[in-house]
Image (tube, rainbow over all chains, first blue to last red; front, top):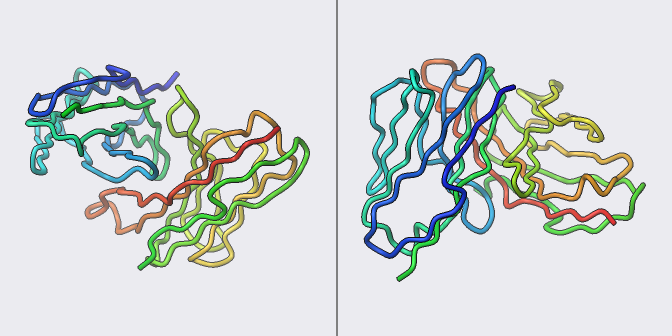
Length: 110
Length: 117
């Protein structure tokens, strides 16, 4: 059965810490992996990854995919309180369908 | 641009009632979809559409109907609400650029929180 598993489920850190969020997957017909940030309401897009070993970066956030070991990580350096959110991982397995993980809830304490 | 809008924000239904959740986007996106988000389950795809007149089922379509008569609107209908349909519903849209340039980034609406008693 296809699945996307995120870990940890929740995380509490202090401002300035670096965090690593994990997403592992077992999905037939893998096409790409996407990361989203969900604050109070709607998820917003962070990255899309299709190739192993190529890091995507946006400011303090970065992500990389390992298609051999079937996982991706999302790193956040020098965390700020505004990084507090649920981070969702989604795997595209057909042209238009995605499996989402349950998310990692990150809380950054001042 | 308003982006993706959803109405209502909150709704309480009794078992057996029907209702329609509205979704509209003003970005001329071809692709629109509906998800439900439940604690411990992540987002699950209900139905999606790649253009006006074309709809298809996602992972959890039972109990829901959709139609796409215009590019802008993609309503989700619950024909006979059940407590198991208590959830937060998100509508999303994206453009379809073609394989080479498509980021598959979806734009999500603010969600509708539905409670069925």
